[in-house]
Image (cartoon, rainbow, N blue to C red; front, side, top):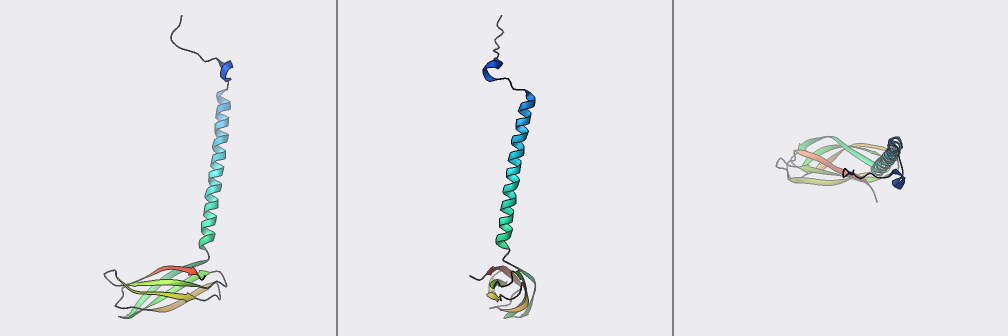
Length: 135
């Protein structure tokens, strides 16, 4: 009697136990996971090392008049690396009223200075756009 089911002969495709299939799946998963972690680690190290030449912060600023503001710059860099930091001043309505590139000297690994940014109108905010090593 044929019940309509077909059976696959183990001899034709080989007999593989569930244990062996689970073992191969685990090994494949471990290899893929290790490769993924290595890739993430490599990308992270390359990102950090690329951006570590010069890092700038602007801890504070003070408006001193309608034509000027004082900005505190704090830059961490490699000793012997000169660069430039760009600072933007904005008015109350968000318009740009001042933009200046401040040179960072090569000496030392840290630069802390209060600089004066000239403006075309009264500024209410200052923003450090970024610092980059000199080319």
